[in-house]
Amino acid sequence: MYGKQGEDGTRSKMGLGIAVGAGVGVALGVAMDDIALWTAIGMAIGVALGAAWS
Image (tube, rainbow, N blue to C red; front, top):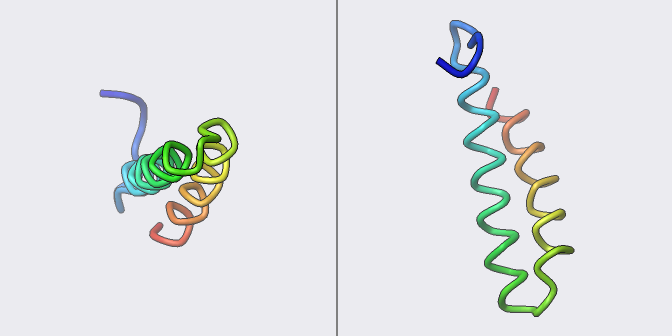
């Protein structure tokens, strides 16, 4: 539906990692009053999580 996905679900795991990381980053950004910085950090963490899960 949203592009070709590997048989092992690689794309969905990467997307899940990015979503989790971004969510954590936004939550930290709201708590620490710097949403842009913590969202970027959360996205980077999410990419790392997605790569580790795949």
